[in-house]
Image 1 (cartoon, rainbow, N blue to C red):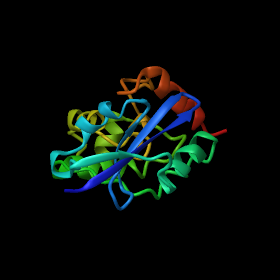
Image 2 (image 1 turned 90 degrees about the horizontal axis):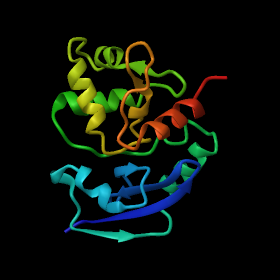
Image 3 (image 1 turned 180 degrees about the vertical axis):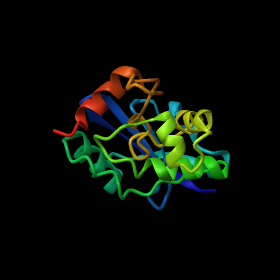
Length: 167
């Protein structure tokens, strides 16, 4: 039975909680103070047997704080572990390569993920992303630049995109 750990940090846009595996890989994360909102997002094959709260998750907590303070690449090297079908897993890996300050449309995201006609599948990959921030689904917007949906609210997405604007 595996144990995962979780912690909540205060950020400029509210509480941010991360759930990490014993080896430190992020299993789920988002702008909530309720770990119960995150655990259903974890793939059944990765669901831990138990969860233990920690004050600090080491490199993950540090990366969250540094990102919100303006070091936009602080989250880039944090390991993330998500499971799904081949397209979704590839799409999540691809999303981690979209640079801060350079949002892409869902159509562009589908193309980057290797299947230009899979716009709905690309949108679904964003919607099912359990590791917000570390897999930056907030960097995908509607064609024409409209903000689009975001699990953690459009105000949070708007703040993140503004925070990442290339100046």
